[in-house]
Image (cartoon, rainbow, N blue to C red; front, side, top):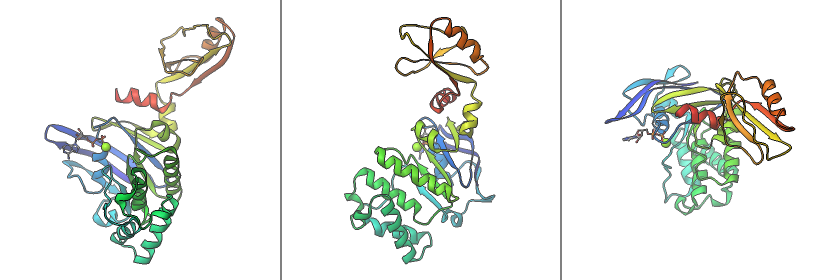
Length: 294
Ligand SMILES: Nc1ncnc2c1ncn2[C@@H]1O[C@H](COP(=O)(O)OP(=O)(O)O)[C@@H](O)[C@H]1O
Ligand SMILES: [Mg+2]
């Protein structure tokens, strides 16, 4: 387990981390969310000793994180860090060597991951000749080459096309299923909702919400209510405190208190006209996120 405890980091007057604590478990994927500037990158860099913390601890399996434990971690930084002039396969092999792999194993693993990421025919190209999306794939291969126990990825989905995003999601799921702890930051809340087991939301350097995706949704103080009528011109308003929410074509939607009685609401709506759709469900992660960081 990765345990970050009460991290504090200040840059001059800017408080980047203000007591943030976070845990990531083997076999699970943690989505790390927060507005720009909330402290995600700083927290992730602290795992790799790239931030000198003012206070707080970072531990893996109960031991303080050391340079030796970092050899078993994989990191995809926000500022992608491959050498532009080096050839793709050589570079990934070399990074595997740096983490203690034998040259033949590193070379084989580099080819395996680059192949899996669709770069099999780019092995001898220089990194600088790859497109942005392909550089991102190579960077992912670099973080995976040594089969890490902990994988930390800073906005791995940014700039990927839908196929690239699917490949990324498959690999993260696959790494978690083979027992790694996976943490990634993202602004793509739909991706996080579909892919992650756990979620942590940071705002102003503090964790404002965390738990399993289902737990966070189920314990939200609001529910999402959606109603559609056979006659689409009917406008109905729930007879309780309700804030209109984004909705699809022909569907009226609100956020309402979680303890509202759906039966009574359906009856009230039925009094206005024939109801063809009625949904009372936990809010989407995106709605919970907006409330949490307000
Ligand atoms: N090296 C640095 N020097 C000065 N300020 C920094 C540095 N790194 C981060 N910050 C500031 O710390 C805050 C948190 O940044 P960051 O961790 O990058 O947030 P996020 O990744 O969530 O967008 C921001 O206000 C950012 O400007
Ligand atoms: Mg960042």
